[in-house]
Amino acid sequence: MLSIATGINELLRDLAPKALGVLTRRRGDFDACEDAVQEALLAASLQWPVEGVPTNPQGWLITVASRRMAEASRSEAARRRREQRAAPREREEVGPAPEVSDTLTLLFLCCHPSLAPASQVALTLRAVGGLNTAEIARAFLVPAATVAQRITRAKQRLKASGAEFRMPRDIERPERMAVVLRVLYLIFNEGYAASSGSALCRVELTTEAIRLTRELHDLVPGDGEAAGLLALMLLTDARRPARIRPDGALVPLAEQDRRLWDSRAIADGVALITETLARAPIGPYQLQAAIAAVHDEAPCAEDTDWRQIVALFDLLRRIAPGPMVTLSRIVAIAMVHGPRLGLEELAQAVADPALAGHYRVEAVRAHLLELSGKNEAALTSYRLAARRTPSVPERRYLESRASRLAPAPP
Image 1: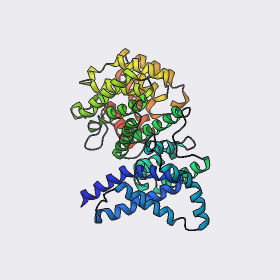
Image 2 (image 1 turned 45 degrees about the horizontal axis):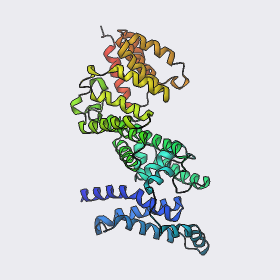
Image 3 (image 1 turned 180 degrees about the vertical axis):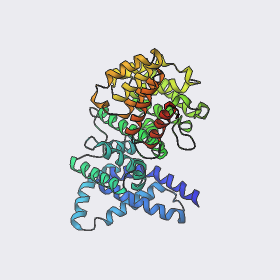
Image 4 (image 1 turned 120 degrees about the horizontal axis):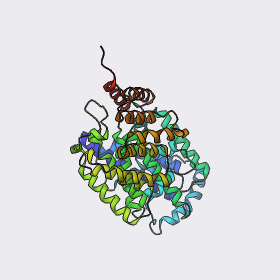
């Protein structure tokens, strides 16, 4: 019975954005359509395990959601307004099918630039990912009420901004695609390296980010950055089985048992980024995927081609500079030219306000100091980094590095 329920939940998660996309295209009121689809999903989760999955499950969801919308609009005035809004769309419905997927249009709508990043993420996971409010709240370690408020405000903001269920115009599409990719990247990163809490990874988020990005890539196969982001996710997530010890402790890249890495995901990611770099204009996600591929293809940490990684980071810094790019490049430079040069680069980098007080600065400093043999100074930086990080697993890891350098008691 549990396996049946699990299968139905997976089916509903896949069907939710498709049903919502069709209904929003027909009716035009995203807020009302999203509420109606959520009610239909609830009804399905209760009825299908008992009565069986209908022959046309997506049509069932659309029909039930449409009925819910009709029931919510009983009054004559509300019905007239709804008919006036829907009339042109009803005429369009008998015409040709939409040129692009409703799911892709829905993804662009949830990532509308009028919304704050946190709202874009929550709305995307709810409407496109099919996660319910409680699941999103658990993934981000916030109260369900907070997520519900974000989603409600996001829908209100969409209505106030006049956002329509349509693909952006050609002139708008590159900027809007960049927002969509950033939202998917944020979802993946929060799952792979949780920003706070006791868990290092939140697999439900990484899994959902990969699924959505794969679907986006299938819908726009010619977009180099969509392909690059998918490759980056596959190559990064492939290391997850070796990244955490049974007790939940973090295992750094250099110490991971590479036999545990997902070789199929690595092969898929390498093939995808190799093909993409050969045909598409280069972008930051492609460069990050290329860096991940260099790491993943090395048989052991000592065989990593750090010179190639430095060259890729140099290019990435030119087209998409950022504080984390700066820190990662410094580590690569230290691996090629020695920790002394890395420390010199770090001393210059900390002038960036975005890095002021960030625990990763002290973590990198500690690592380079340890490589230099300056254990006492490294101990101080490890402890400082441990105090600053909000992630419990990272704090434990940094404390363990510090304990290895602490002088033995007399």
